[in-house]
Length: 99
Image (cartoon, rainbow, N blue to C red; front, side):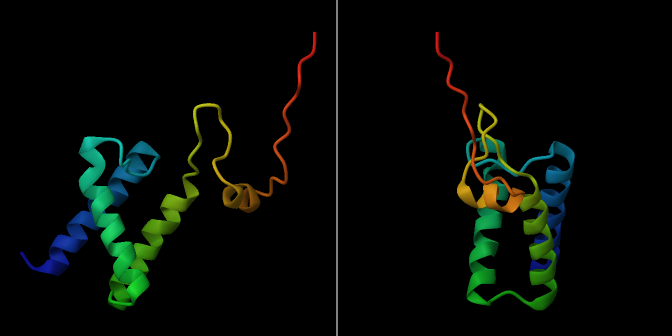
């Protein structure tokens, strides 16, 4: 099997996973670690400019899909300021309860 075929298989695996589970692979789940490592490796190659154009376009599509899946913590608050800015949320207001 050639490297292009291996790359395409892994790409299809990650895309299928995200479409099926509606989330990104988690570094906290053992079964997702191979996908997480593959994504991290390809992010580095993309940043270094060492990825060919066809792969780069496909990988950017995968990253856009991942970015559309906003992570939330257990309380439902958006994790960081960047995501709040993207979603157009200026401030998160909390109500203070007084007795």
